[in-house]
Image (cartoon, rainbow, N blue to C red; front, side, top):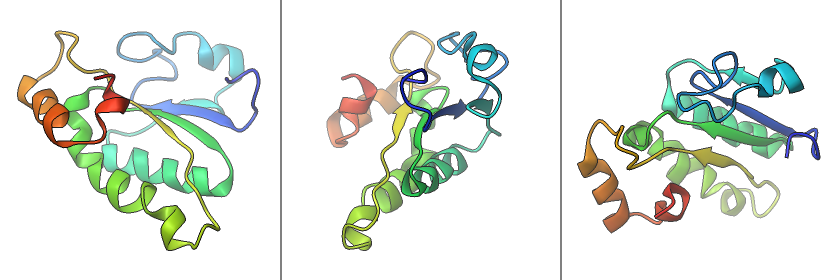
Length: 129
């Protein structure tokens, strides 16, 4: 996607220089530059909130939250902002964004989080469940 669309940006915790916690973005910063693939501070709500703004501005952010266990600090931005932006703006704005959250790979800090997400959240599709 980075090669096809100049509006795509990738950012999140350690996705730039280190290539992500599972090295999924390894080499992307060297190939596409520091303005399109970069690190973000540890603030899940901030990462998603900025992505909503970028999407409304016309960019296509792909953000990574290191583990699905940290979905909850970002959930307010996902539910209250990203999901409602189009309705609140009478269709004038949308927030096209992708949120990566590795889940249930044996590395989660709390397996109950994934179980709760599967049972009660429409985000299960984003979690790969």
